[in-house]
Length: 129
Ligand SMILES: [Zn+2]
Image (cartoon, rainbow, N blue to C red; front, side):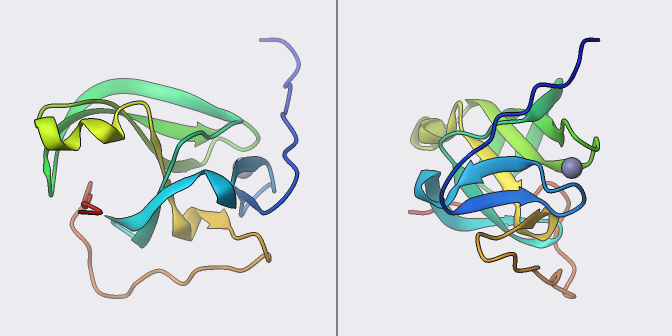
């Protein structure tokens, strides 16, 4: 592997809470109405500086999806997932988009998000309908 090449974003940035690698811009949020096992999660149109895991089919709250986990290139932390394909027609808008778990990232103002103490179902998901 060569040297890490990190893309630097400017503006209202969501970044890795461990190593501060930039991931996405506030302007690229497609929906905040998502959930993951740590609580809130946001759907982004694009995310940078992540590596993709293995494709797998995962049953979400809104049906079956083909997803890949996404990891921070700086520190290897699991930070969310990407939708490769949705089986339900009305979930197709998610394809090619990314979920960042709010608990795993720092907000534009450097804020931490406290994990929701109420247990969430692993691999959860939601609709912004
Ligand atoms: Zn990181």
